[in-house]
Length: 599
Ligand code: F6R
Image 1 (cartoon, helix red, strand yellow):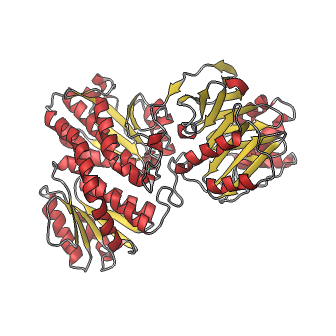
Image 2 (cartoon, protein in one colour):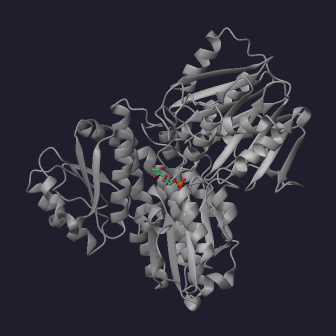
Image 3 (cartoon, protein in one colour):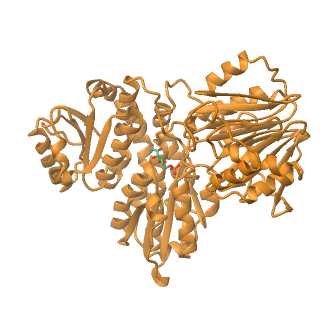
């Protein structure tokens, strides 16, 4: 989704901004631009990619020598992708970039119109620019910014520059904004990746903070008119993990890193057979009910873990889609001892964040499982358990999924242990998974590429599984549709004959996930037979062969609850290879964004 970068220092800003925007490309976007403070503000923007913006900057007649500037990648919300709607928005005086959504922009537009202002773009961001301009007629830039943001409803992270002022102004509400710090240089960004090549030190702005960044590394943060100090943080990611490292796409690189990401995550918490989660133990011990909330792939990780939670703990575990939960009326009793778990790779997903806020309002204790340090969801939760997946750049989430699942399993194991259940064997099984995944990637990657070559031109795909393999069928279908644009449905295998079997014919193959665990295996194979009887092709993913398979992917034998960790890998690789064969933009699929910060 949209990305912000800003720079103020002693180097040419344009190159730093363009590199910062390139590092934010993974978030998904449709246009990009920069504004650099020279004698006046120079704005260059394009519909398209950062590479197009670089060409536009190289061919501009304007001298981009300034050492102060702001940049943006835009993912269209208000107004279609176009040069006019791209940020920065500017007039002779100001340039602004903005992430988020201004809900009351129409009312403000009416007000501005009455005062002689006219918009050029269809965006809500230009509304902010004009409102600041309006107030700046009587107020200083800082006061005008404060006055303008006090009237905005919705979410925003804003960076603003003004002609003849050697400063960057910033404001934040419900959308992340970080100040990167490097001696006498400062960066402003919506995400650490934008300045990771320069510094790992940063300060996340907090709700309703307004900041001024000046030359020589000086900055001031205010909240409610009071000057405030915010703690400095340091990110432990390195630049190398955020680069492609010889792989054609980040997605394949990230799938190949699953073993390492998983080992890092597991060994951060498993210590000598015990699990150390930094969560209040009495809270965990007394838990009687668990609500897990997330979106997309994170939701499927939650759904997969439900089977393990309920088997191990015998406590009800509800897994909810965040965009539904946030508007639901959850029933909570005082003695319920409900534990709320939010899962989010980015830690910024708007619906998950609002679900978390709802849980907090209801007085439920919250834990978040998050990959990005110091992200909003992490900071809002009572407790955070980080996945140590490292930066996930590809829009399609892969290594985050296995790490989320591992954390969910460790949470279940910790609660079980506190309740006096012997979990030694489960811990042993979990710690064995990373090395299995490492071998599996090397063993099956090219085999799956060959299978993908047989199926890349179909229009529809069915994915079936039972029990713990059902959420995997949903995740397999999601991966395929998001990057290959092939329509895919994930279904519980037993539901097939209640409707979707009507879709099956010789052109609609079915991916069947069937670990060798009864009664699931035999029942799933029966459903696969029903597909076969209707001329449907079968790709069988299992540790036990059955002659029905047109293509068979042999999975390693692990116990039932751990089969999800090993079976997700072929599903991800299959989607990847299909999309790659089709020549799609695998890492930045159309219409999608990495971090979904709007509803
Ligand atoms: C799919 C995918 C999305 C995300 C979803 C939640 O590959 O990446 O479905 O899983 O948008 O994102 P996070 O986990 O950042 O909250």
